[in-house]
Image 1 (cartoon, rainbow, N blue to C red):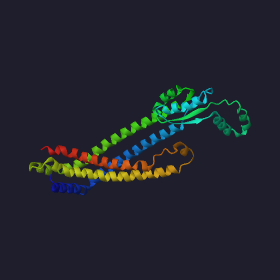
Image 2 (cartoon, rainbow, N blue to C red):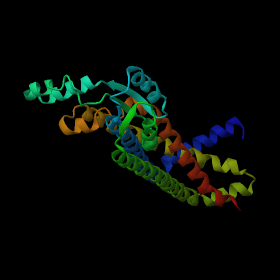
Image 3 (cartoon, rainbow, N blue to C red):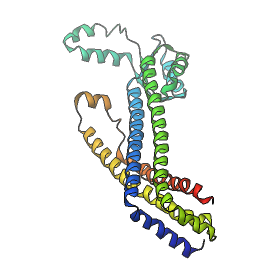
Image 4 (cartoon, helix red, strand yellow):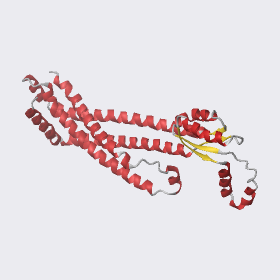
Length: 301
């Protein structure tokens, strides 16, 4: 097709959007709903991942040092800890710091804690934050092998629960996105198929007089992309607007919810720049592919 034919056929496709208003609105409505649910599921999955990472970082792994170890061994242990794959950070806590911490918890018994100044029963330790929660057991075993380490206390069971929840949510999110994409494709295909069926005689005549498949298919492709583009724009507005309100509400939370969520809520600035192109490309792709699928069988005459 030359440029003039392409422009003419594109105008025909856009004209079909207004000509078949009822079908166009139905297609836009269903595709918008599917995209909104898809976006909500994706954002929910992203926030669950962020929450699991946040909760995991709050449950530190404690590496206890041997009380008989000299200062050089204790200092060298830091480098060995940081060399373990999956360790994000490590903070040294001396046994004096531990004693001061407990003294602060029980200020009314401060004089009792003073008795331990000359015979401190606590162990110096490193508070380790693990970034790779999936392998916390392996990391814990490696930490135990470091010279000067006598014990490692890691929240393995709690972390295992967090990781399982994360995997379940991620899998469910992927399945939901795939199912909604298929549903959207079928709906758009059926919507445009009705328009194609109403014009099947016109298509047959065009084939008989020598029109190419691409010449016939292009207006319907433009119609499908137009439906997808409009639905994508509406879905973007709904999802991003609702998420903006959610992030503002989460910022004013106090008490238990603030303690639980902390800073784990993914900010809008971190998601909008991939939601917008994903919606636009996804909506246009579903609309275009659905239209091509609808026209195909009517081209065989």
